[in-house]
Image (spheres, rainbow over the protein chains, first blue to last red):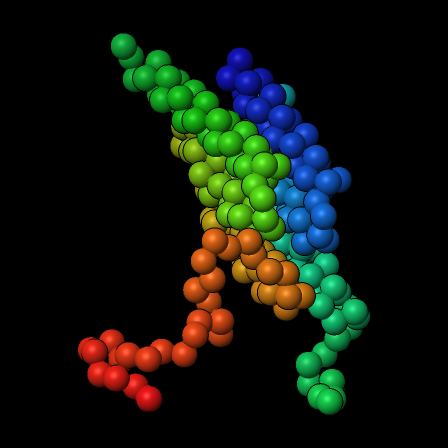
Length: 94
Length: 123
């Protein structure tokens, strides 16, 4: 029963993070909300793994933790340099 | 009160506290006035919320491989979310997003100092 309450709380937090993702005036609000949605999804995966008695969901959560971090950094790199293939060594400074 | 019941009660209490702080962090994410303060509220989700929730689940799982994987997940959260927050804050400052401050004490905006720390007069 407590896992169902934890899952409900995670869903409420997910809805609130989606409100910020839709509403955020700057793009960095949306990146922040996206990162939080990823973290909350991983926690929801762990709780659902306990609810259904399948511990394999934790492996998916571990993988997605790393993907979430790399995705956030990739989006930020794209916004800063305009190019995902930006290389600081070959860039000529003005 | 057997040990199994005590572990159950402790794990449920930890999970309730963790869920509460998840909702607190998400409400802060919606209601904070500025992107920098929202970053601080979102970090509550990653550290306190996830920490308590994963601790409660570890107690439920007992001594097994599930606990090891949950602890690895917690370590990844504790290392990964400051990296993302730091990169996001640097990106915001690079775009010259001004934080909403009552008193601006940043180093490049302070007026030049007229006194040294030990009272000497600087020119």
